[in-house]
Image (cartoon, rainbow, N blue to C red; front, side, top):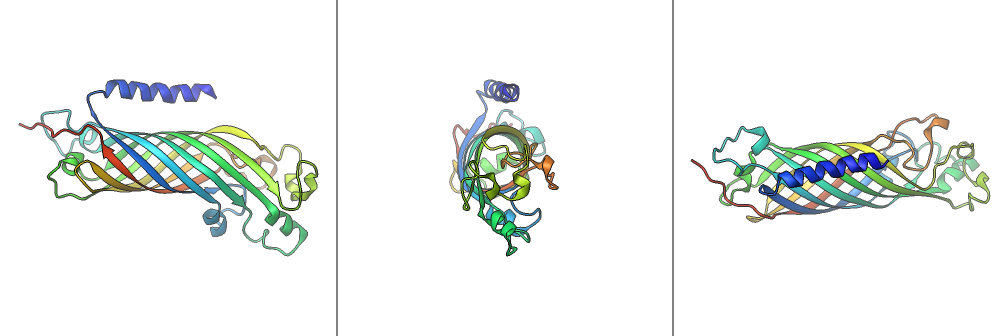
Length: 263
């Protein structure tokens, strides 16, 4: 798994090396991340909404609009795109079973309700953000533009650690406290791991001051793994990979903005 990490860091290093004279932003974010896993039922609101945890992120932005003397608001590369690198921490997402089977008044339903999981995760991300309004018009100190919506897409590499417990007893001493399908051989993968994910999202920036923006963003992450929650799908009827919804707000500071030159 070291090769993907090396590739990401090489890409980031090249971007930073080539970007020494470009414009940089730095931001901090806080919000929630809701994980859809093998806990609960697919497309069940309780599973999607309640299995969530706090998330925190720091990000670096690189943009290019003031690296040319000629201003062209339709130049997508220079005036509408940013490169974003991000480190995100998802804190102790609590996982529980919700839905029809977990609500049944039977011993199997009781086993499902007693089964609790948690996940901690660190995500390293590399993204492109496309802004609807020209960045030069938005960032320029005397602009009348306050909002600048954007779309984002990219990849992330995740390091995670999951855990499992049951309120009926210690499952490592007596695995029968878990629902039957989780007692089968190779049905659990508890511990640490790594996974790739693909991200898409949208958001907006709101200009607070000449060098400070308020940002709100909503992201969808699709993981190329189904064992992040510690439950192996190949022995279950549910064979879908994990995914996550993240909603965050934060502040972004323009580090070295300088007014562009025109002619």
